[in-house]
Image (cartoon, rainbow, N blue to C red):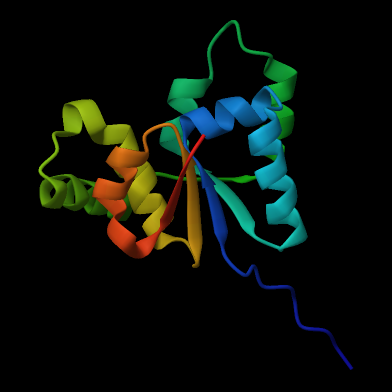
Length: 137
């Protein structure tokens, strides 16, 4: 008998703060990541989040190790258009909320149930509505 490939039972999404805390091995985020692995959750972030996290003073080996343990989802035209729609629907402006909108569009496209670890729970909740669980880190 051939085993079918494992299918993730949901998705854990890290915003830039969640990703930064994962790099720093923050206890709360590390616990979430361990739970995600134990529950076979897919762990992702948006390519847009990397822009906020990667900087010269960051521990580059720790960043690369952390990134190797998750999926960095690209910002496609489809994601960008969905992000623009989310901004419009929430009455928010792209200049201030663009990265959160791209992360939200990425989260909404992921297999559910979806949980987002974020430093901006109000913005993410406004952009995603009730379709994702938003956790402040």
